[in-house]
Length: 310
Ligand SMILES: [Zn+2]
Image (cartoon, rainbow, N blue to C red; front, side, top):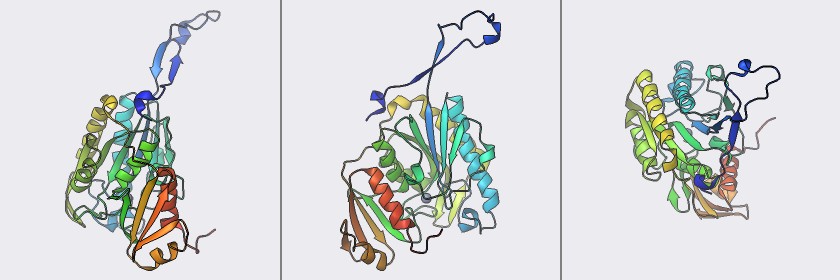
């Protein structure tokens, strides 16, 4: 369903100066109409300015604590830009690693934050068709890209390719298809040059902010955190100002998902399920009725282990 066809809910506010009304006076009904603007922000970390190795990406890394701030600040740049553009509600999803990287006390009151895993919808958990736009912060290139800092798709440890309806996808494209199925367009992404080039080859007219130029899997020529924040803020405002230009990225259903593993055993074991086909030694195929089902399937494949506790 296109955003153009979705009913826009309006909130009626009474006079901006209620204290000027006498106690018996009824509130003015000739109120101002405020349009709702709900913005969803999915945040990863590999595409944040300065990130080049695992030293920045997880609790074991010596620079992780500093980079949680930088990641939060890049997200705040998008939040502030959205609020300055009239956002009425914002949901931010902490979608990197343990899902507990963002510093939640830094955000203004109209923001809610999705944390930790598992959660239906993965990196887009909490998104529904009431949202007007989705933004990606800190996104990275896919596992099939020859370039890109820490390029991977969902799991650098386990997966070598994820495809939808025959096309290898980035996390960004997968998540855009998830949002598209709900009628929500992705209008902005930040990350390194390889990530943005790859994403723009599918989501043509999105606004972007390049945070660094990749030099290899573990090297980049990066902007400073301050300049990166400024670029994100500027581009998010441009994107929201032309919101009507964007269409949800909807793909054909049912959706054919293929996943290639680094190792042989996951493909072998999963093929015991009658709903899963083994395509080759390292690859399985699953057909889901929609992106929600495909997203849940990916989460099971990458998240399940008999050692799970509690
Ligand atoms: Zn990622």
